[in-house]
Length: 293
Length: 209
Image 1 (tube, each protein chain N blue to C red):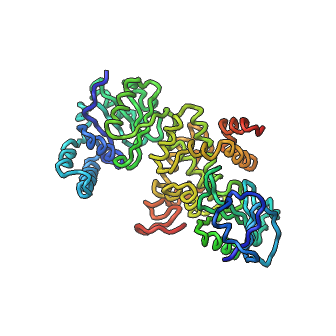
Image 2 (tube, rainbow over the protein chains, first blue to last red):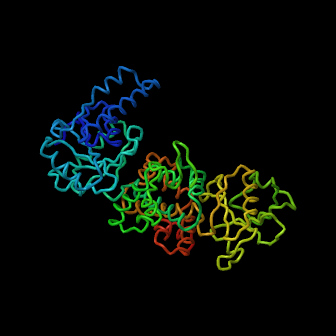
Image 3 (cartoon, rainbow over the protein chains, first blue to last red):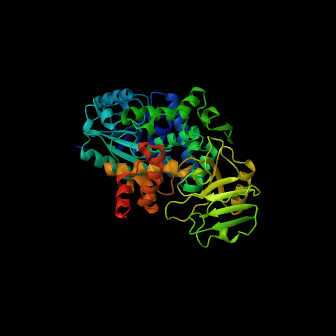
């Protein structure tokens, strides 16, 4: 039996996605427990959260009193036992099925029966994550977009055994948190990545095929279609190694040739050309400046 | 750079009333064919042929990768019946003269258009890259992954797109999507380009089969 959600716990709250989700939760009025195995990560996330709300105050979007009230809703812990009062746990830990399954199994012992477990996975099956949790009827997918504190969209995915009540409660929480939920099935990549990952691969294959340069393809997509970023700008931002991991998550399940990592992508990763973070991807980066590849 | 336009019938790149048409003058160094057959003239800086879904080689002929001259293809990208975008896809061949590319670029950029250069491959840049995505979205719709509205919302909010794949392909025309993907499928033969069921239905209802 579900209860109204008052306390939300975020697992992996020391990471970029987890800390953003925690901001969404606390900002909407929920008591928010930030859990991570790394206290350094939690410290870093706290500084970033303070800076985020500090900017909101500076820009007049929030009063200093409101900021203090929101910051007062956060607590931080490296002990899973402290999640005992959570009505909703959102996990945003490392994208690995076994890691997530172990986490949910441990939480199942700690949390009350009514607690809903939500996974922020972008590639894994909600049904598989829920399996072995001991409460697979109370597990649901809530996939946030980066940066979570700014992006409204949440892909909501029920697993095979997710109860209608769990889905309804999670959906209502999204709305109460000021987000925009969209319902999708428990399929690889849900909507967003199912469309985006093969499209990005197609762009890489077009470069391999000598159709045009990355810069010209980016220009075509931005000017012709009005996208904010070109596909190669986005790939460099996300990281080419991340694109390979996405491909490796999708292709073995879907066997869609468009989801297979293109040879050029693998060669670039092997050469250490990972995108912005390595200074070289489809473009060359020197600080904030970008140069055509 | 001055340009001459030779036109027969409607142009998808420059519909009647487009200011680009009014800027043309006879006897210029750049000749633009809008629906008229290619007339070679090596004295011209560039000769530009407006393309539909066909390759430039259909007009010029090809010779084992050695093809190329002062003749280029082009198309202003347009989603079906939507107004033409500011984007011009300029199509070159392996041995196309760089001076011809520069002349073509100068003509279009002076008109406020954005030029990208691509090889003479089916679908050029945008149709080659977007049509498989529209096919996937139409298939997802049939398979119940999400509603059309939710798919479009996801792409607008999650990816910052101006419009979602379903609204875009429907606005451009599903029968038009069929024509483009059928042309691409004939060339590439890969399932990604096989027209989606909804596009086939639209084409059949149009009496195309």
